[in-house]
Each structure stands twice: as C-alpha cells, then as structure tokens.
Image 1: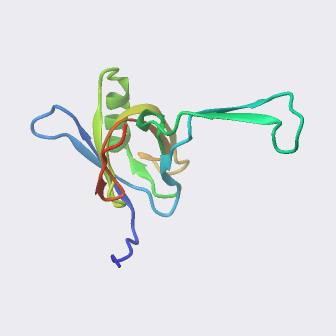
Image 2: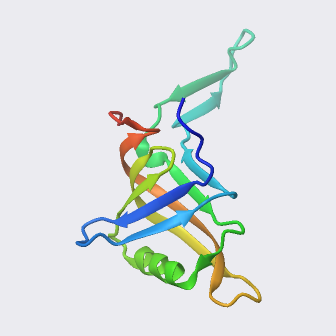
Length: 148
C-alpha cells in the first residue's frame, strides 16, 4: 500500500513554453475534486403498464471532456504573484496546461474559471477557487488512460 500523502499538491505547467512555466498550488486542507465526471445520460418518463417500467434511461457513458477539476484554497492563501500568473493564463483563450497532482493524475486542462478574493487585512494574499476543464488524460489515478 502506498504511503499516505498529507499535503496535496497540484502543479500546472503551461504547454508549449521553454523553459516550462509552472505554478504549484496547495489544496490541503480545503477542496480538491479532480474527478467531477458525470455520465452523459438522460432519463425519460414513459407511459407504461408495469412496475419499474415508467422510465427509460439512455446512457452514452463517460467522456473525458466532461471532467471538471475543482480547487479551492480555503485558508491556504495564495500570493499575488500566483494570482497574477493564473489571471494571465486564464486570459489566453488558446492556452492549455498540463496538470499533475498527488493522486497520480496527469491531465491537459483549460482554465475555465478563476476567482481570487483578497484576504482582508493581509495585503498580497488571497483565497481563491479555480475550475479546470479537462481536454485530455495522460494518466488517471496513476495508471495510463486509454479511454475516450
């Protein structure tokens, strides 16, 4: 059994830069949800005669582009340099980033939402939330990904 990771880390590397532009985010102890991955499906009520036949479920499975990664700093404050870098990256509409985490995930992501909030009384420090949309998966939970 692998050792427990006490402090979760997420690294974002800007794709196509040499040298690699990288930021490291701490996500402990607050929110880190790397696998918000809903099934593409719809459920329809139908006219039916018997018990349990009143719905039809149509499922198309899971698609990697439906994954949303949620990160919130909580009281792990982010400094102004990190916030400025993420703002700059978010404004690059064609930007993509390699995300590596302590769970063994390696994703290619886009920055969909970034919301920093200045910490009252602590100049240059912020709490923040970040949502990343997955564009591709290299590894999922430490294993090579071969799905769609």
